[in-house]
Image (cartoon, rainbow, N blue to C red):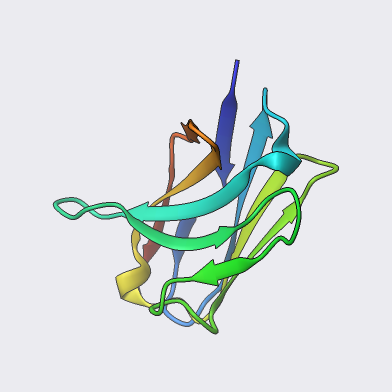
Length: 117
């Protein structure tokens, strides 16, 4: 059974920081491209950051988070991370972990991030 479990969300003030984690099980984690998405009610889910698997481990970011968010992975622990700094109110959303390999695609249940004073 494939499981992606996000954690680390919460309430933070503008300018603050959070680290999201995604624990993966049931997949050959190092082979998978891993991504973070986010979604607010009434809007489509948007890609926040991605990191390729297998070879290369290239990173890509949405323009709105470049310079503030950093995606990383620990293949030995089957973990994906998203370090979020200088948070803004518009970063408020449910954040989802996503794993892709060929035609295989898996999602976590999401973790809520709320940026508010």
